[in-house]
Length: 127
Image (tube, rainbow, N blue to C red; front, top):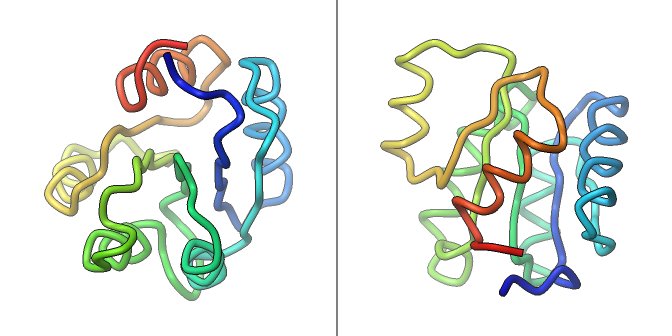
């Protein structure tokens, strides 16, 4: 069983999306959610605190979600962190690039609590 008290980090430069994902996580029973508005901020936060899961947007400036993912996978302390990428684009080459970089799963916007739950179960297990 997954510990719903684990710390989750959501990363998106669009505040409305942060709020939506936080609310969906809350519906699913996750209460410890931190937010970052870009990849660099997220990376700094991850070096300060251990997260059980990262949910990151793909398109952000100055560091994209893909760059964040690559930085996380290249860091010995962080590389095992479960990572879900969120994007508005479902281009096959993007999915392949993210998989090659080590993403655990991928969500295409818009999505609902059921979709998020299915992705979470596939990445972190049943809860």
